[in-house]
Image (cartoon, rainbow, N blue to C red):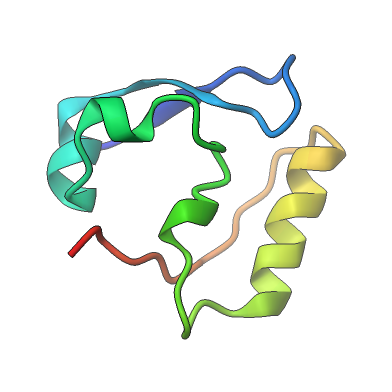
Length: 76
């Protein structure tokens, strides 16, 4: 299992914790992920769908629960 936790009370929902599984899967060290947006926008790439990015942002902005499939890129 891989996951990160974000602080929903601060603008851009910064990551406050990432587990070892997320670090192994993404290629990022825990320190590199801390304080980045928990929308994982640092993992978006050329083929990440822009409409899906907008939907994710809206979900976060509206404090909703939703499911989106998104293409994320590892560090390498």
